[in-house]
Image (cartoon, rainbow over all chains, first blue to last red; front, side, top):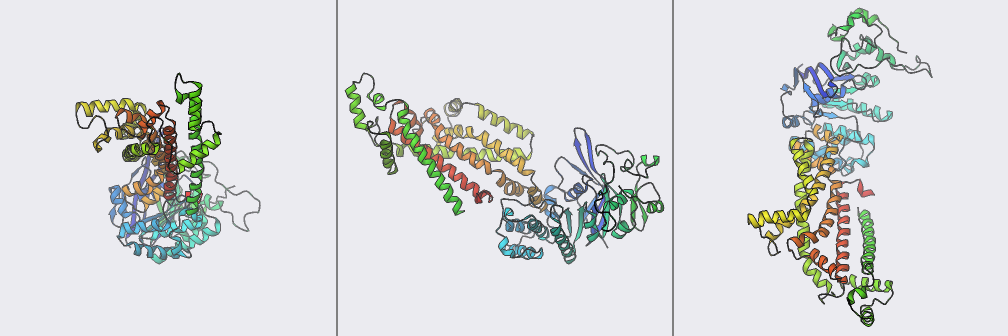
Amino acid sequence: MENLLSVKNLRVEIPLAAGQLLPVRGISFDLKKGETLCVVGESGCGKSLTSLAIMGLLPKIAQRKADRLEFAGKDLTGLSERQMSAIRGNDMAMIFQEPMTSLNPAYTIGNQLMEGLIRHKGVSRSTARDRAILLLEKVGITAAASRLPQYPHQLSGGLRQRVMIAMSLMCTPDLIIADEPTTALDVTIQAQILRMIKELQAELGMAMIFITHDLGVVARIADKIAVMYAGTFVETGTAEQIFNAPMHPYTKGLLSCIPVPGKTDRGSRLGSIPGIVPSLIGGIDGCGFRSRCPYAQDACATEPTLTDRESGHTCRCIHEASKLKALTWEVA
Amino acid sequence: MLHFFLKRLALAALVALTVSLISFSLLFLAGDPAIALAGEGATDADIHAIRTQYGFDRPVMEQYLFWLKNALAGDFGTSYYFKTPVINLIAEKMPTTMILGLSAISFAILLSIPLGVLAAVKPNSLFDRIALFISVIGQAIPSFWFGLILIVTFAVKLRWVPVSGSDSWQHFILPTIVLGYYATPAIMRLTRAGMLEVLRADYIRTARAKGIRPGKVLFKHALRNAVIPVVGLAAVQLGFMLGGSVIIESIFALNGAGFLAFESISRNDFPVVQALILIFSLIYVLLTLLADLLNAWLDPRIRVA
């Protein structure tokens, strides 16, 4: 099947007084129609900036560079803000992490839901209104019509995130980028929203990039997973490959941090990977994880490349696949 | 919304009542009004006669209530100087001042809000610096001097506009610019600061993510939120302008209420001064009320308060 989104060597550069900050340092991946890619990584690893870079929504100070950034056969790298705005919301949409602040306090829910559809599809207000009501119902909001004249401050966080999701679906985009859509919500709501996103995605046949730091979430929704560390993907593969046979020491560390009922002793400390992420200003010498990795060797001082180890399962590490699989790392 | 409106209206009425008491009391601020009115060399008998004639011998509270009752009916007494009803004098002069005030605030808003928005879109750019420069100048130049410079340049040398008077709309151009320019810097800087903050907000990113056109993001999504504090400021500025028109009106010989106030103060014409202060204050209270209502319309979160 043809690729909906093709990204090659995507980089983000932010000039700072202290030097060039490189929060995203060469991301490549392809996404097919209807597929879900989960990008996992800890805070500050460049997940959000990657998604903003694809959408063309980076802060002004940041520069986007890419060898290829193709969406539905169109090259996005050379598009102006105006041309990009015709694609955003229409063909690719985004759900943000902060439902409390992502809606404009001065306009009604209805106005904000409808404006994108009216702008992109040129439909009448009443058509847009019908679609808004339909989608509000789809995201599980009762008495949807009566919500339209309400303002964001009249809704709870969970409701606002549902509105945000409905808003992203208004034009039936081919790609949804969800940047930690459930992080700001409490756990019971999280599960509902996740299930709903997954169902809607299947129903509407959309591809999705789902960004999260929560591996529990990833397990429920991912087709493909990319583990991100210090601005690069360190391991990519199918959900099965990553969960059943993780290779990269960082992935292994992350997975062993998840407390397992019955295995993890009650009252014991939660695991964490020791050490800190290297500074993202300027270049990183060798493997970015080597200062925290128990298997680091002298050879790690040269930067390893992301290579295919078996049937699409890639890993950025100097060690052999067979050796990596055999390694066990229980973080303390 | 109705509840909000009634609450604000009641507050405004209370403020107006307080203001009326203060403006009435001004009469006694400069000492015994009877002595002031009688003038130099008046005998005790003259002073006493004036005191009885104008009712200054009655208790202050009684005088106030009497004055208030008449004022509510539109009767502010008779001018000591012109010997005509104060209300007629004011009705004759007020339109000039109102036209000047409204055109000046319109000029200020139409100039400063677009400048503020554009300065915020490209902060620290050349445009932003020029806008800052213009605003610093506006704040620094005394308006009487600026007015004279404009008269010399555009009326005397270039002869584009008349020098002074209030016969046609052309007469209002220079005074509008002088009075409006004074309010421009504050409104522009506040718009700029508000826009800078709002443009960083998550909902602006959301609007862009929806593919809303850049201009609409700026003027629909950002400006409406950024302009909320500006509304209050503009109302206050308009109030100041009506007061400040005293100077502008004398420079351009616009025969308005400001000029009348200035002259009446120097003539000890208390009924006129009292009435003008009350009316200007009431306009001010009304403007504040209007600003509150406009803000409630702009920002739905205010409506509950």
